[in-house]
Image (cartoon, rainbow, N blue to C red; front, side, top):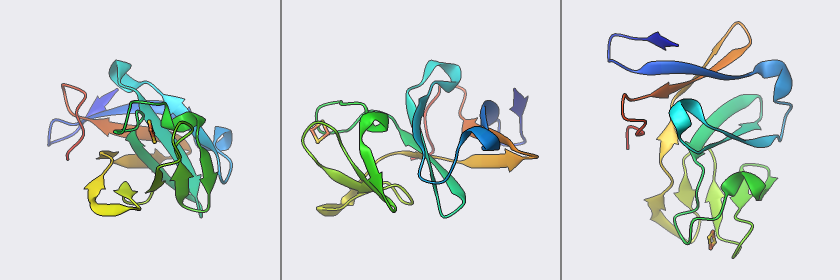
Length: 115
Ligand code: FES
């Protein structure tokens, strides 16, 4: 784990080779439940529990950039975390880095996102 100037801990979660296009997985850096997806070659990380009733978003379905929650079909844009039915509501997003094929998520010391 590496820390940067902002005190963010960059935690290696997966290798790029393990994340093909359209993949959606749960990862647990520092014990925090985060869902990760790949869309158009970019990687996105966001809170792993749906803010409706807490269902695991990594068990949902991903079509393009739209993730549908497995429980009650709420839909989110994984690029921004935006709830499709009400754009003012968003999933918390986490910054990601790809360092030579190693995918890292930027965590604050308490495991919170920046949002
Ligand atoms: S828990 Fe996700 S839509 Fe209900």
